Amino acid sequence: MYAHAQTVIQWMEQLAPKSMAVPDDRIGLQLGTLNKKVSRVLVALDVTEEVVDEAIRLEAELIIAHHAIIYRPLPHLQTDTPAGKLMEKLIKHDIAVYISHTNYDVAPGGMNDLMADRLRLTEVKVLEKLQQEPLQKLVVFVPVSHADSVRMAILDAGAGHIGAYSHCSFSQPGTGTFQPQEGTNPFIGESGKLESVEEVRIETIVPQSRRSRVLQAMFKAHPYEEVAYDLYPLDLEGTAYGLGRVGKLPAPVTLQACAEQVKKAFDVPHVRVVGSPEREVKKIAVLGGSGSRYVRHALFHGADVLVTGDIDYHTAHDALAAGLAIIDPGHNAEKMMKEDVASRLQQAADKHGVKTVFHASSVNTEPFQFM
Ligand SMILES: [Zn+2]
Image (cartoon, rainbow, N blue to C red):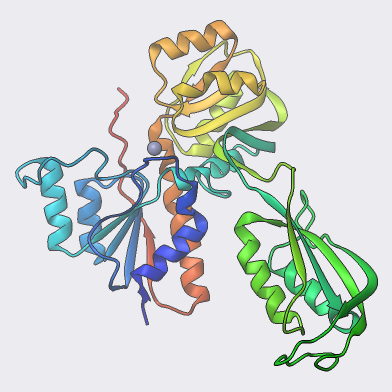
C-alpha cells in the first residue's frame, strides 16, 4: 500500500503548517496533482533539470522542494525556455511539485531550528518574531468520579504547557447545581428536579492551535450531556514564531574557530567571513537563506556573529562598522533540509504502515564554484 499524495502533504504540513509562511510566499502545490498515490517522493532544495532527471530515474511521482519553481507571475509556458522545458518534463512524467518555504523556515524543528541545533546553540530564541500564538484559559466542571479521566484527556491533547513543563493544571472541589429540562437524558438526576453534585473545577491553559483538539478530547471524556466550560482570552505572551534563531554557543570560541564549526556543521567547503578572526564569539544569530536584512536584528539580540547566506558588499561594511561579525556559508547551506524532511516523512509513512519511500535528493544544486 502506497500513501496518497494528499496524505503525504498532510504529514508535511504537520511539520510546516502553511499558516506559518510569510505573506505572499509561493508555497503549496505548484505543479501537477495530489490526487494520486505516490510510491516514491523526492525531497530537494531546488528543482533544477538534474533534480527532475533524478526524480524520473527514481520513478518519483512527487517532489517536495524548498525553493519555488514559479515565483513571479508566469507570462507564458514556452517549452523552448529552460523554465518551460523543466515544467514540460515534469508534466510529461506526471511529477507533482509541492513547495514548503518560509513555513518550513519558521516552523519549530524546521530549517532555522535545524541550523541552531547543528551549531549546538542553547537558550535559542526567534530572531525576528512574526507571529505570537494567543493563549486561552480553559475551565471545566466535572463530577468527582470523572475528574481524573477528563483532566488527563485535555492535558494529553496538548493543554497545560508552560515553558518546558507539560500537563500543568489546577483542580478545586465544589458544588455544582443544575435542573434537567424536559426532553433531556441526564447522566445524574432526573428531569424537572434541582440537583446538586460534588464537582471538580479543572483549569488549564490552551494555545490557539490546540484548542479544537483539546475541546474534542474534553467532550469525549466528559460524562455530561451538556458540558459546562469556559474559555477566557489571556493577556500573556504565547509561543513566538518567526524567522532566524539566536542562541549561545556551549563555550566561547574565536571567530576563526566558529567559521570552522559552521563549515563542518553545515557541510560546506568554504565560508566568507567578515570581522577579525581572533575576536571572541559567544552568541550567534543564524538564518537560512538570504539574511542581509537581519544585521540589525542580530545586533538587537546582542549577537557577536550572524551566520547567513547571500551577504552583499555594503551589508558586510555596515556590519563591520557596527561591530557584528558575519559568517556566510552560502544560500546552498539550506541543503540540510533534504535529509531532515525526507527522514521525518519516512518516519510518518512507516508509522502508518505504508510503503512510500522518501529520498533526499543527491544532486548538488550549488551554482557557485570556488576557484
Ligand atoms: Zn532559501
